[in-house]
Length: 104
Image (tube, rainbow, N blue to C red; front, side):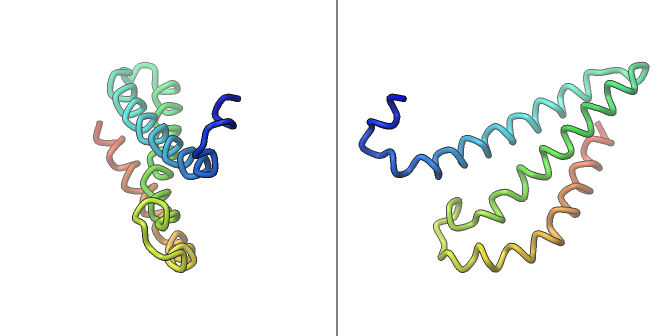
């Protein structure tokens, strides 16, 4: 509750989004190394880790594109322009991350 009393409490949503993006990126990297460490004899567990890693990785790639005004300090209109692009970017990000995990 101390953060409510801080002077810059008006900026907490942007800070939360940056922390969330960092968590997605760390989760993606952790899932990648965990999937490479799990041997193929435990394919069910490896498939679960790969599935979570692919989803988290695709979100980590596409979140800065979707929230461009926060990440790149551009005009707010870019956020509206990137929403239709997400229809194409998110599946491509899923495919790219899946290929990366498949190679591991």
